[in-house]
Every structure is written in structure tokens, then in C-alpha cells.
Length: 327
Picture 1: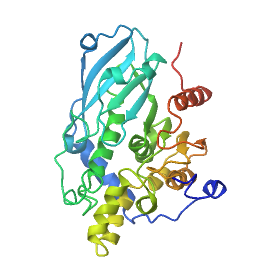
Picture 2: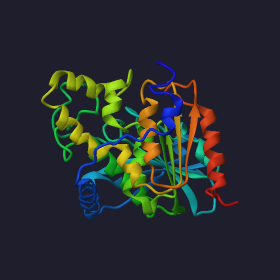
Picture 3: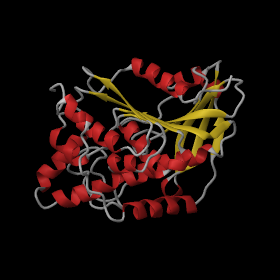
Picture 4: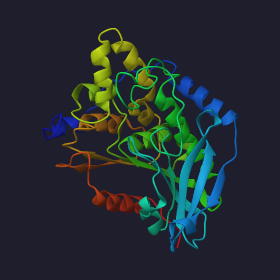
């Protein structure tokens, strides 16, 4: 991969005109209203002893997501901590699920609560019933239901992610006014979606190397990763499905969610990232509506970004904004 897909100076001002559907806001209002109208209980079971942890409390959570279907999550918090705690709602990278609680001990070690949200169909604990066509041409989730915005996979997953933030208010010991939407790659794109769809419920955004941004550009220049599923699909279906495919993806583009998000946001980008090319990250960042937005640049990084060093940057950034556990 070249150092960047554009000159670094050009990236700073890269604000592409990404087409937005006329009914984008109405589509998402309808989608979320339908999911919320179905209701459903948020359930949490204490499972700390199963995982032999002595400093962290763990709850196995189920909350209603898309179509009222139960979505799995882990809730971790420091043992004995007095709430209400700020909560990092964590969304997972592509092809991953919530895993095990022992995979997610960092934020609780720093004093935060953390809600780790399973990705339907990608993890093992939240199935996806699937709709539409496309998967016969490219293995994965990027083309599942891509024939229509109503059928598209990410309509269901993004709804789950917003409903996870809704669930925070029903879980004891959490501060629903200090919700931090966070994730890397797909998780970063989902965090942006939640910030744009529920701006009144998100206090900060940590979007690390975000995926799901500027789809047409990504499908044209990505060298590795899930965007190539769209490229392969269109290779078989060009030219007759090109416009309809991107018309569907326009409803799920992080650029549009960024335009509607107002919470303080910390992005990161790897300038040698072949999976989420830097221009796609800057497209969302430069359109971000919130006045408090910061980009962490890793000049020689691929899709690993700053690895563990990025966490230290995030914690310092949160501290500067008063989003730390009360001592």
C-alpha cells in the first residue's frame, strides 16, 4: 500500500460530496421507531464466578434489538465500584462477536463500565435471520440484502447498536448521561452510526480506523478487507446493479451519520491502511458536525493503527473532557 491514497495535505481538506437519499432521516426514524415500539425487557445475569475474575464484575446481558430480537452483550465493571459509572459501549470489528469477558478487561481496569455488544450473525450468541440476495456472490455480510435498504444487513446491525445505548438506561449502576460509543474498524463505523442516530444519548465517540464510510471510494481503491465483497459482487453484476447497490449503501454511509453527530469525537487513521483507506476515514471526519473533533494520525500504520498506544491516547482525551470515573 502506498503511504496514502491521497497526499496527506489533501486529506486534511477532503470533503467529498457523498449523495444522501432524500428520505435518509425518515428511513432511520421509521426504523428505530419500529424497533422501540416492540419493547422488550433488558435482562442481566451475574456470571463473574464462571470466569474466575476477582477484580471485575461480569453480567451476561440480553437486550431487544432489531425486530425485538434479543442481542447479547457483556457488561463489565470494577468490583465494588460505586456508580453511576461512565460506560464505554463497544462495537466489534468485522467477522467478530463479543467473545469472552476476559477479552475485554482494559476499560474496567481503568474504572469504567463497559458494555460489549455482540454483532448479529458475526458472533456466536446473536443470530441473524437474513434477508434479500447477494450472499451467493460474495461470502460475508457486506452484500447480504443489498437489493434494498429495508433488507440490508446493516439496517439490522445498526439498529441493534442504537438499542444497546437505549439499554444503558435500564442497567443499574451506569450513567446514561456519560455514554461513550467506541470501536475499531467496523466497530468504529458502528460507533459513528450510533452518534448520528442517537446524538442525545452519546457523550463521546471513539472511532478507531472506522469502516463503513464513503462506500464508493472504498470499493474502488481498497486493497484488502470487506469492501472487496462489494467489488466482487459488482464485478458479476456490472453495470446494471452498480447504481442500485450504491443507492442502498447511501443509507448506511458513515459520512451521513457524521454530519448528524454532535458529541466530542476522537478518530484515528492509518496512512498505510489497505482495508479502510485514509480518504474514507477523512471523508467522515471532515464532515463531522460536532465542533470538538480530533484525528490521531499513525503515519506508517496499516489497519492495526496505533495498537495499544491508541488506547492511551483515548484515555487521555477522555480525561481532558471530564469523562472519567469519579473517585
